[in-house]
Length: 84
Image (cartoon, rainbow, N blue to C red):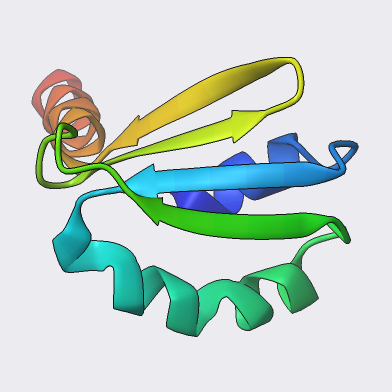
């Protein structure tokens, strides 16, 4: 989900990824691989925000922000399965 948000923000020079402390190291370890898979070439900073719920991340860029959530993604999957 974070990779998708990075690809959407490809024209930004800087991204700030805010997430709960329990995800910081995991996200930092994947940043280079994500940058190599996308066309984003700017700087990405990862910071702790323990006010965010578990499973949620906020990606900030110059002109706005995107909030990604595991629980919302799972809810969409459930809806798709139920309507199929």
